[in-house]
Amino acid sequence: MPASPRVTVLMPAYNRETLIEKSIQSVLSQVYADFELLVIDDGSTDGTAEVVGSFDDPRVRLLRNSENLGQARTRNRGIELARGEFIANLDSDDLAHARRLDKQVAYLDVHPECAVLGTWACRVSKKGRPMGLYQRPVGWNQIRAELLFHNCFKHTSVMARREVLLKFGYDPAYQVCQDVDLYRRIALTHPVANLPEPLSSYRKHKDSISRRMKGEKRLAQMRIAAVELGELGVEFDERDVRRHFLLREFKAPEFPPDLLDWTEAWLARLHEANRTASRYPEPEFSRVLGAKWWQACRVLAPSRPSALRRCLRSPLARRAAEDALLGARARLLDRPR
Image (cartoon, rainbow, N blue to C red):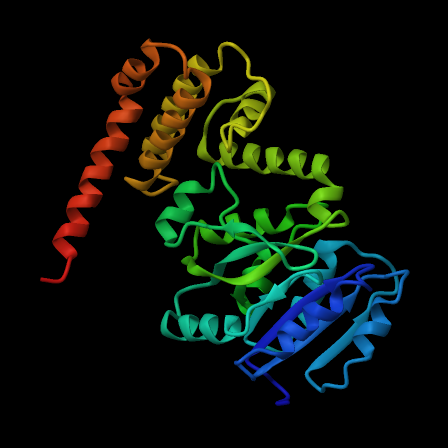
């Protein structure tokens, strides 16, 4: 292996004795060969380090934290010690598809302005059974337009330029969702993208961090949303942040009776604030707001005869429809003849 491989695959691990072997094998099976796999054992109390040490491959580097430092500090340590120009994240319970590194390096070489490149990801069971697909927005403008509502990257699929990660770093103040905070900060000023194909597999199991720390994850996501709202220049209170969080996916079992009224007024406030701040790109941001309004009408008022008329009358819906028509017209004009 070269002293300075182009790619460092960074894999923090904590008590992953039963899962990390397949994760490592997926990296060593890559078509692209110019990489190192940097595994940092974050103070595991099981046999994680022994499993990693059993691989007789010079591309595998194992480092061990003397104590459990947590995700953010461990990843920051990995960024500092990485030898590669690019850093590819892979969690110690997930899998990289064979051409993942190959395709991401090729894209970053052609697009030197791109700082962060994710991909879509498959959702699979612990035993590898398909369970669905994680899709993410592809282009920089669409990603920036959705930052206020969504996590636009699947962290275990991301490859980024090391120099950018050194500049921004993970914030240790976030016990979870430190990746969401990191990529939103980068995306505001640096071009980012996602490849629209699944090149990683995210394994769902009972010991995953997202499942074990579901409550902490929710609080962190609301905290990040509050930061975004503050930087946009919107006045809000704690109730607004809780309700804004509901607009992500409308999965709550019960909704306040006035949520539809609040949603229309809130989305209009966001649109007006962005007209002043120009924080998110247009017309993409208006499309996101319009989509949220249609979703709210569909979920919150499906049996009300006046709901459709109200949706159509709202400026939010009109802007979304106008932008959709403009987008369709542009695609037709760009179509090869």
